[in-house]
Amino acid sequence: MSKIVRLDMEQIQDWPSFHDVFARTLGFPDFYGRNMNAWIDCMTSLGDPDDRMTTVHAPPGGVLTLHLDHMGDFAERCPGIYETLVACAGFVNHRLIEIGEAPVLALSFWR
Image (cartoon, rainbow, N blue to C red; front, side, top):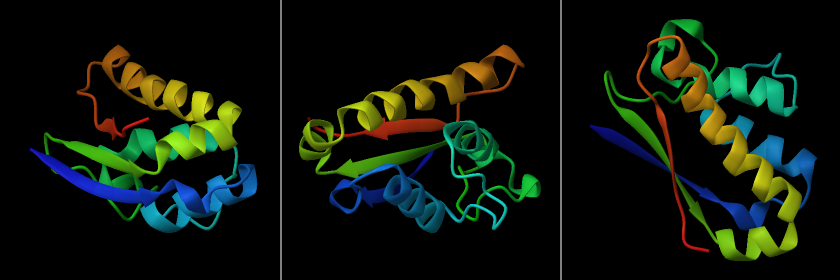
């Protein structure tokens, strides 16, 4: 089972706008640290609503898929942020697997 959330990557021009878009779309808490360590912490909790790190959650036993619109333009405009996003999304699932839990995050995009 999967839930799909669309993000318009045209809204992201730099790191501040990256954190604005993800915090707003996924409902990160007010104390969100606006760095990739904090992003990873929030995204790792997608499968655990009790953590209150997001207001959007993966379905029980399922995956949250982020459908990233305009990813090709984003990758050209912000190559460092693009590479970091892909790597950190992979790390979220790696972290969960390491503690014996199932992955909760998938990325969908066409570059």
